[in-house]
Image (cartoon, rainbow, N blue to C red; front, top):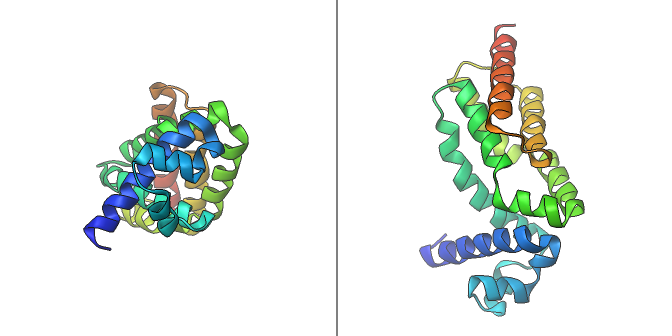
Length: 174
């Protein structure tokens, strides 16, 4: 993908995040995205022709943000960093307040598409000598997405991260 297209897609992802944080699903119309991003409606239409295209732009941006978190040095830090990213995510926090039904749809999409994050996550778990089978990854994705609904505080995320990391270590030994 050339640099110009990548910049446009990054700008669209930022506009999508901002708009859904403020208005939920209602923030996903062409006019609102054009106003927030400064990109013409025609250009937006060229990049987003379907809900799948929109999801792809968001996934690209989110994975770019998540990949550095995967380099955490310990299982506890990895789990804590990922849980905190989700719990403090601008769009998720906004959607939870203004459009919880839309958050349900997003949650179901994430749960039904774990392969988008499962490969990099499984690879990192293997590097940390932890369990990384498909059931483990699916369970981990479900635990992480639970922070979408109740972001809790840093102490509760840390405690949860320690428990999950201990379970991953134990499972790897079996």
